[in-house]
Amino acid sequence: MPQNPHRRAFLRTVASLAFLPLLGRAQGGARLTRLFGPPLRGPVRRVFVAGPPAAVMAYVLAPEKLLGWPTRLGQEALAYLLPEVRGLPVYGRLVGSSATVSVETLLAQKPDLILDVGTVDATYLSAAERISSQTGIPYALVDGRLTESAEQLLEVGQLLGVEDRARRLAAYARVALAEAARYRARSGPKPKVYLARTASGLETGLGGSINVEVIEVAGGVNVTAAAGRGGLTRVSFEQLLAWQPDLILTQDASFFQLARQDPLWRRLKAVQTGQLYLVPSLPFGWLDGPPGVNRLLGLRWLVRRLNAGVEPLDWRVETWLFYRLFYGLEPSAQQLEALLAGLQGG
Image 1 (cartoon, rainbow, N blue to C red):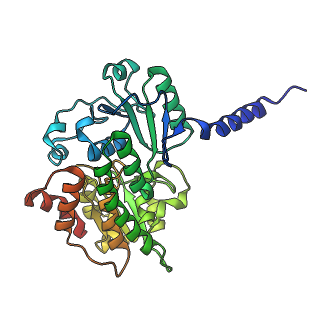
Image 2: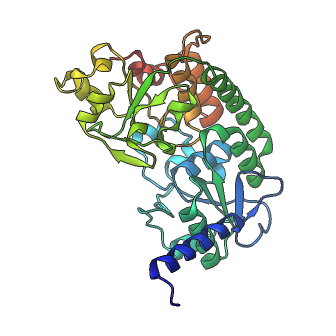
Image 3: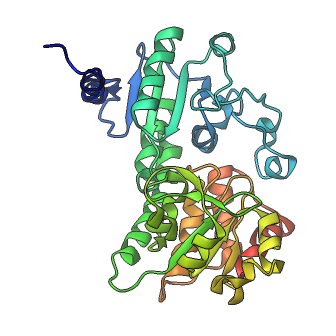
């Protein structure tokens, strides 16, 4: 009896998904990193990053090995990075719907390793296998969940041959994550939080989105999870009125100004009570943009904003320490003032 075509498609999908965990091979002892393509031929000296989270990871661990950026960084962001990386070329993204890098461009850079950090699903596993097969270049795909930041640093640090530096950064990550876990485990009501992206403020992440995971890791509730699970999405203002978040977070200065003045946004209790925060976004976002290890400082801040009784921090000191440790640059008094201006709420 001939099979229903929909059933055949379903069976092919099931077979494909069953195969996916076997794609790639775990790095020696690694839990989060899967390697595709040929083995590394020697020390990694040239790293091509597949997207923004990988760029942050490569920069904080071994900026001298970074071949270029996946997106253009503005002059304001570059001012917080080491001078030697400010003039690196912009190659674009290697995977995803906005990928722009050709195989020819990739081969011309002669990287020792392609590094990708972020979501690990069927799409990214398949892309890693395809690109490594086409180019013959080793490809490392690393699970980029925030709660795994310490292990990510250690595993990528081992790949890049910078284990000592990776251990120092991972130690900071462990402190931030352990602190968050203690307060996240507390019983009782949790604050409802909305992360407003873009100048309109109506783009955000659904439940399970890597772009907003910092909210739940810090002990809050992502109000947009009520609309379902997935990635980035747009919501209506009517939905926001119904959800009435306790806090609204944004990294977009245009939206921050708009929401404080617009009568429509002022209908939200969070705006009326000054619980609207402009969170720093330079050189990388404290909460997102990209969803990489850059979020660890934002996590420490958000834990204190969402949970009572957490030991306070001097944010000028903590920010200076984090930027020196992760970005290799000591921000000036003026830079610190500019970074922290929106954290008082508005």
